[in-house]
Length: 118
Image (cartoon, rainbow, N blue to C red; front, side):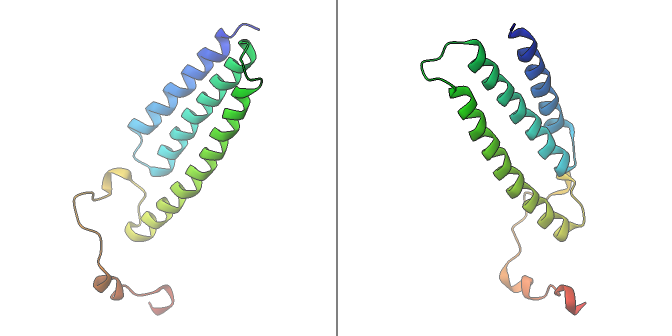
């Protein structure tokens, strides 16, 4: 098997992921771009494992499994942050997140009505 095709495919996937992270304003699409980059790394790991004679057999596949676990954890935490952002701001646009203001303190959190108290 010629490793050029998977390497070029992985480079294209990684490039699309970088474009998605840098150009998108929606937080969910940014997370999808990160997932594309992680999948490109998985493709490179598996291709390198099958084309080279490694000292440890199947080491690329083991690293790919770790990347898959990392991606699952990243999506879980990322979607929780996106849901909290949507609840607070009613938007998931990344450029609308205020980074220079202090977070809400406990006093102002007491004034926020709960869902059943509206």
